[in-house]
Image 1 (tube, rainbow, N blue to C red):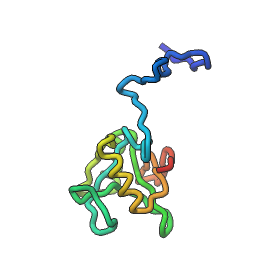
Image 2: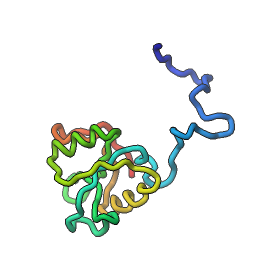
Image 3: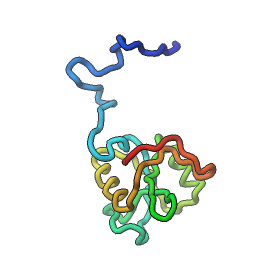
Amino acid sequence: MQEQPMSSGDRSSRPSSRGTMPAHRSAATGPGAALEGMWVILVANEGQLPIADADGRVPVMARSGDTDAYLLVWKNVAKARQFVTAAELEGAEPRLVVRSNRDELVKIAHAARALGVLIDYDAQTQQYGAAVSL
C-alpha cells in the first residue's frame, strides 16, 4: 500500500477532538523535550564536567571551536552503537532518553555549555542528520 500525502482536510492521523494522542506518540513538553525517544551515549565523567549522573557518567558531546559544545543523540540504538564502535569509546553505554532522565541530561548538557543537539552524528564522516536547539 502506497502512502498518499495528507491533504489539509484529512484528520485521520491528527489527535482526536479531545486533544489526546495515542500513548505511543505522546507529545513531550518542556526543556529538552525534543530529546525524548532519542539515544545518548553515556561515558565516565573524568573531571571534564562539574556534574554527572548518579553513576558518574555524562552524555557524549562534540566540541566546535574552543567553547561551543553540542549534545550528540541518535534516533536508534543501532546508530548509537555504531558511533561507540567507530569512536572506540570503552565503557560507553547507549541510553534511551525518557521523561525520568531527560531533565538530568539537559542539566548536564547546560553545565557543559551545550548550544544545541546534533542528531545521528557519524564519527567517520563527521556529519550529522539534523541539529536542534537544546
